[in-house]
Image (cartoon, rainbow, N blue to C red; front, side, top):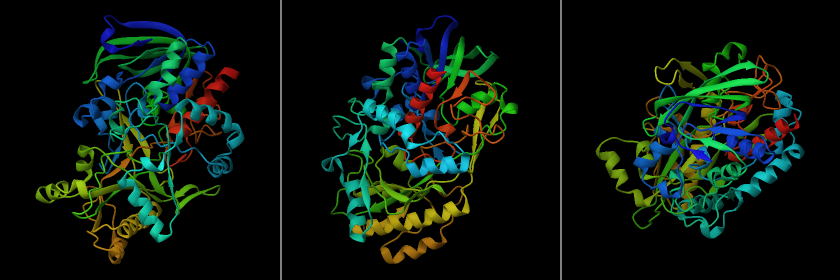
Length: 512
């Protein structure tokens, strides 16, 4: 059963065995797995419930409805826009459907550096298999790769660089290009179309428009979850709610799971809370292919092709390297990241049909943190503090050169980036101009869709927040199951790692 915010006429008070906070990649899997085993489970989701009829394909409407802060959640310096879903199904509704799992080298890094002995491919394999089956993961076909992404493959091939095409969780895709705004054709198989409906069929109640503000751990067998039923859209509190549970599973995402724990007064017991933040920032690359080439980047599967030649995943360093990925986006988001002001910006937008767009993706090491301040409405506001490290910036420069070289090899006339201080490149002979590129606040426009690490998994309560079973240190009945538990960046695209770990975590809960 789904109970939406407008259906409540009085304060909500109820009990359940398990309360799951958040309905995205982590929360949906946990709720489904527990419910299938007969555990009475309630899901609390701050965002609203939308289905294919509500996905209007209009950016001005859907960005506000489906994204955290209307797709305007920035680091404190304004450099990085941290994109997160906030709706029934979470980020699985608005992501690009890329399905990349964790690798053995990455798990070996976690075992060696963080002593997470249970993190092995053999242990993960059953969970990964179940997740892939539920999402209907399959290879993107060659005929589904649009020109925007094909140009990445063409240019890289000419230069002798290895490439790949993503696996994805779409079935029956018509190539509308509106993946970021929710699929109006139900082709993208997010959690709102599989895990959550099956959980509901098994008895789960999902409350949408239900904002959790704090939890109160009374004993090892009793926790109270407090919050507000919201008026959708403006997200103003209408009515309070209180849910009593024997177990609480935090799955509100790497920005808000630690925030709720902090607002609940647990920060003093968890010194690592909000630390070890990874964002895996990405810089946009724009290539103009001239008047004779209509790229029409906004049609087709948005993100399907990428380079693999400079990927680097090792037991010693974890995920590193850099890559170029093809990407299209809506006109509004593209315009917001496009460099230039006034007439120069308008001139670039007038050439939109001829522009190719992509991202230079550069995995980072944990180097940021979260802070919180009191907020009169919610009780807390999250602040994302992040400063790119020198080593990361150097890899970004290499990735920028790679991207430009690939596009020139594919026939681009000009290449530039989503930073005001990057030069306009006219040919591969201009690549050296990027040697002096400085990543400056107020100039660079970066995005992040992979916020991780703020409730890091580990053995030591002084340097981590949860143990290998996802239990919060010092609490028998409090868990965190989302990307915040990743010790380092888990994968270039994190949906599959989060769901895999969530499946594993839920089955460990059942074993207990």
